[in-house]
Length: 321
Image 1 (cartoon, rainbow, N blue to C red):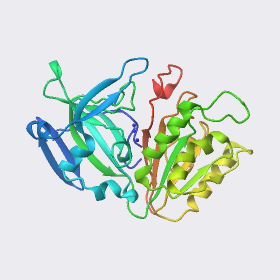
Image 2 (cartoon, rainbow, N blue to C red):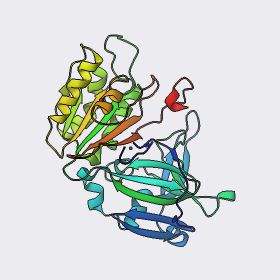
Image 3 (cartoon, rainbow, N blue to C red):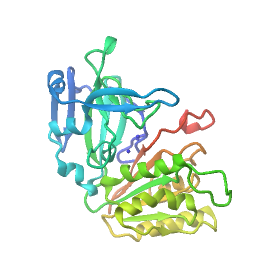
Image 4 (cartoon, helix red, strand yellow):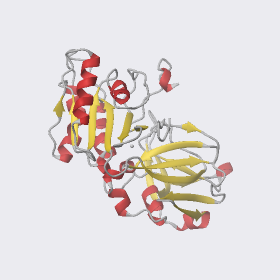
C-alpha cells in the first residue's frame, strides 16, 4: 500500500524528519514488537535475491536485483503470523540516512498476496555500501528511499479497534458524463486496491450508487465475498458524509471497513470520523489511501498512504507540490 504521520493524530506519504540517532551504521536495523534486530551489510549480502521489474512512464523496463522486503523482515523474526494479523493492520515504516521516510502496507510486498517484489537494492558507484528501496508500482520512484538504515514494523490498530480504509474511486472515463465507468487504468487500480487491502481482512464495503465507486470496490468485494453497502449521494455532501459515518459506526467493533467515495467526500468522511481536517483531493489524485484506526477510547489514528500506480505530478494540485 505509499503515507504525513501523526501517531496518534496523521501519517503523510513522504516525511522529512531528523535522522534517528540509533540507526544502524553498516546495515539495516529492524524493529518489531519492541525488539530490534540489526542486520549487518554482510548479513544482507548473504540473503537470496529477487528481481523487481520497474517500467518508468514512457521508458524501457528496468530490472532491479535485491533482497525482497518480506524475506528481509523474515530474517529479522517477522513471522507469517505477523503478516496475517489483519486486526493489527501492519505497516513498514522505512527510514533513510537523510531522514527521508516512506511507508508500505504489508499487502504491497507480501509474496502470498502480490506478485510485486519490493526489494532493497545494493547501491553502486558513489552509493556503494548503501541499500536503496525499490517499489515497482511507483513508476516515478517517489518511494525509492536511498541508503535505508531502519525499518520499523508497526500496527496501526489494536485488537478491538475499528479499522476504516478510505479511497476515492479509481480513474474514470469521460463518457457517459452522468455515470462514467472506470478506464483500463482505473480497473488496474481497482485490482491494486484488492492487493493493498488483502491483509486487512475487509469485513464491509461502503460505496455510492455510481458505477465508478462500485467498480473500484468490485475486486475487493469479490475476494472477500461481500455485497457493498450503497449510500446515496443525491442529497448534500454533508448529508452523504453523515450517512457514511453512521454506516461505519454501525459496524461491530474490531471490523475492517472499506469506504470508496469521491474527491470531495472522502476527506470530509475522514474528518467526520475523528481524523484531522483535510482538503478535497485534486482531480489528478487517485492513489491516496487513508487508513483510520478508531479505538473504543482515545483519539483516532490516521495513516495517509498510496496504492497502485503513482499519481502524475500536478503543479495545480497544492497537496502534490
